Image (cartoon, rainbow, N blue to C red; front, side, top):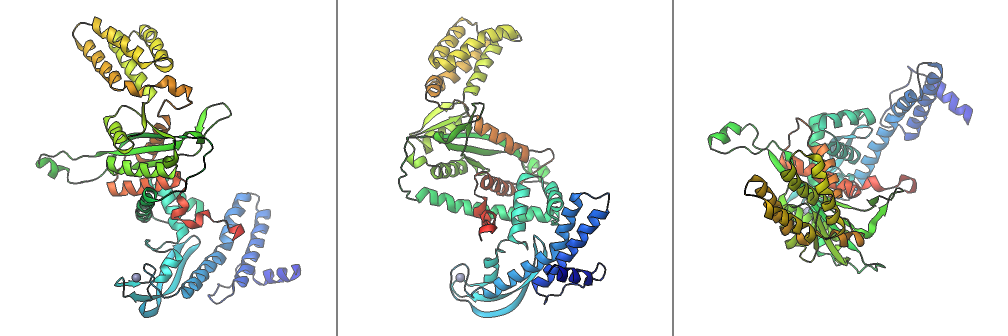
Length: 477
Ligand SMILES: [Zn+2]
C-alpha cells in the first residue's frame, strides 16, 4: 500500500501535475493533495531557511483545491436535494426552473452552484429554496463561514484592519468596503433575531426553576457617546437653517447578572461568571426593553429581588422606577466619593493634605456607617460658609447627597455581600469605547446599531444562534 502511494506520487511530479477537472472523484484529488504534501515536506527538509511555519502555510495551500471542490460538490448535492417548497411559508413552488447559477466566496475559494427557482403563490414571490438550505440568504455572495468571519472581525476591528487580518489569517480576500457591507448585513440580521428573542423572553412562560438559594438580580446601567456621520456633508446647509449638526450620540449600555453567579479569583477578587450585556443606539427606550429581556433570560423572573446600581444620572433612575419599580436602587459608591471630593476641593482648593485629612474619614463613614451621618456633616459645613461660590458648590452637593440618600446603603450592602459599585458596566463601556471611539472613525446610526448588536451576541455567548455552524462539534457529527 505504501509502495502504491509512492508510485502515484512519482507519476504526478511537480510541474507535471494535471489540472483538476470537475469530474474527478474526491479520492483522486485527495491523493494528489497527499502527493503535494509529501513533496512540500521534502522541500521543507532541504530548505535551511524554512521553519515549520512555512509548511503550515504550504500544507494549507496543498489541500485548498481538495477542500474547495468538496465544498462545491457538497453545496451542489445539497441544492439538488432541497425540496421545491417555499422556505418562508412551506407552500409548494410553481413554475419551477433549474440551472440558476450562483457564485459565492467560501472559506476555501470561489464556488458555483446551480439551483432551482420557483414561484410561491402564497408569498407572491420568486424563491430559491437551495439558498436558504445552504445558509446563503441575506448575503451578497458569501458562505456562512465567511459571513461569520466578516461579522466577527468587523465588530472587533476597524474595517480596513479587519480586511487585512482576515486575509492574513485565512487567505480569504474581502476588500474593506465589501467586508463592511457584509458585516452590516449580518448585524441587521442579528437585530431582527434580537427582536424575536426579546419578544420571546417577554412572553415566555418559564417553568419555575428549583433554586436552592434565593438570589438577587443585579442590573447596572451607563451611557457613553459616539461620533456619527449622520447628515454628513450637510453641515453648511443645516447651519444656514439655524441648526447645528449633531455628531455625538449616546450609546446606552447595561449589564445584568445573578449575584450567586459571582465567583472569586484566586486572589479573592469577586468576578462575575455569567453576565448579560446590552448596548444600543436606540435610545433609553431601546435600552429599557433590551435590558429587561436580557434580565429575564438571566432569571429576573425567579429572582428574590432586583438591585439597580448606577451613577447619579437622572434618566437611569427614571428608567429604573418605570421598568423595575420593585427593584432596590443603589448609587455607585465611587461616584458618591467623587461628589464628596468635589466638596473637599471647594473647601480646600489645592491643599491636598488638608483635603485628604477631611475626605478620608468621610469616605470611611459613608462606606462603613451611614449616609445620613455624612450628610449631617456636610450640612454643618454649609451652615458655616459665607455666601459665595464655595457655598453654592457645597449646597449643590448636599442636595445631591440628600437626593440619593436612600440609594447609599453601603453598610448593609457590604454585609449582604452585594456590590456597591457599578464597576462591571463601566468596564464594559470602556471596552466598547475602545472599539467604537478610535480617532478618525465616524459612524452612522444604522451601522453602529448593527455592529453593537453583533458585539452583544458575541459577549452574551449567543453567536451560534446567528451562525449555528460555530457551535457544532465536527468530531461528533
Ligand atoms: Zn411562501
